[in-house]
Length: 290
Image 1: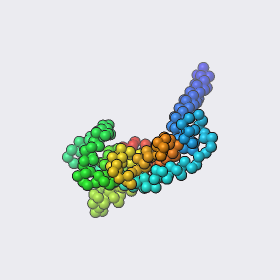
Image 2 (image 1 turned 135 degrees about the vertical axis):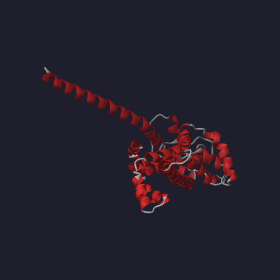
Image 3 (image 1 turned 90 degrees about the horizontal axis):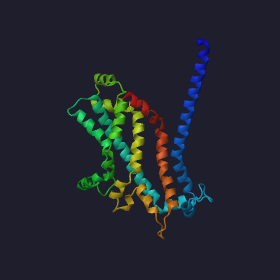
Image 4 (image 1 turned 60 degrees about the horizontal axis):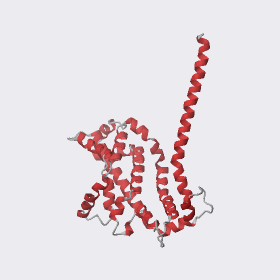
């Protein structure tokens, strides 16, 4: 009796496993569709005429308007705005990685007064978003520092919001044995030399993941560059410059140009993701180590 029941149990287990796998694949396909469909619509819409895009009757363009990208590039002054966005994003990414990695190293390796308070404050900034409430005091602070007429004020503010990167690197830092620090001190390395020569190279996966998020956040930032560049259009970023495509000379909405400009603005993020993809896949591993 037990011998006959065993094949039945195996068949039930195989059917159950197949059903769960099928449900998982259906869920993943639906999720991928919901995620990629808006992107596909935006890309296809960037090749339509404004009338066809506004009507929304078809998904694929009746005639592919490649000139939309040329006009979007010229009208939005993309070369200048792209350079400004790259400057802010790269400077913010580098500054955030340096500040957050040093903070994570000190918190993980050293004991100091109010250490738990500092970590708690960092955690609170992740859950409390005051948004535009702090924009005025931030701008006034930059005025006192004489940085309100340059992009460095925006960069400094973005670097100060490094709590998310701090906790990512803190998780990866937990996976680095502390015996390496002790061996370095025996060899005569100072705290700073140990960090720069030994710990930082081992943080490469975490730095790659953090760089991706920091670059994306700085690239997509809109409100800060808008406020800091109102009196100097030449310093506007790509996200701010895209709004200039909304209306043409005749005050007609140029949705097709905005679509083309938005697609152009996505390219740098895709390039950064390609280079940071390997490190991004190790995010879970670093979190488990933490």
